[in-house]
Image: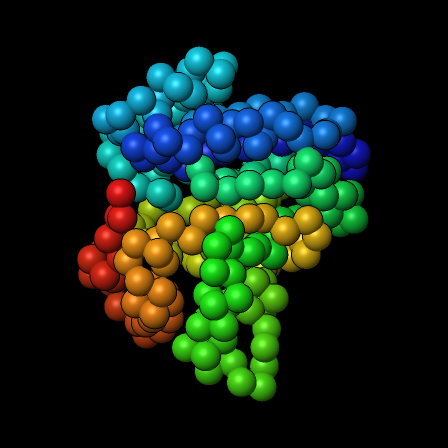
Length: 239
């Protein structure tokens, strides 16, 4: 049994020079008894994302093309941790975030994700999610049902990641697909405390209702079998 596993924290990034140092600091401030390696999974940034990460002694994995699944798989393949933790640059963590992952693994869970809150307008965003998903009687979020997205901070034991053959290399919904396969075949946990704080920047820039509607519509269309390559056109990068 893994008592204090080595954690590979994999940062997904593309042109994030304004936030890359923040997420590295969030990972380095962790109070954790085990070993931690920090890896930048970069999709070909043209700004200072890579150089800034290098200045903090972060391992760099570059892919020839931008793509979340491609980037995360490449970094995972070169990582050495017993547990993989996939993070975004706009996340903020409590100091016991990694310890809570280790505890979940010790308790027999194979992977999972975190409850999250937005750094701004959280009540408004969560309320819109409830309304647009018609969760009038069942207030559970997708993560309560074992479906974790990137902003839930997906974690997974390396052996399970390998058995699942990693993320399906599609342009969108790779996190939904992976967590669904993981929760279907293995024991997963939603860590409610500590929560992960995520940025509301997309909601603010693209519009609150538009952003939440996009998430709902894309998920439903994906479940109906619409190609992810078509769906990706509905969810453009905001940077």
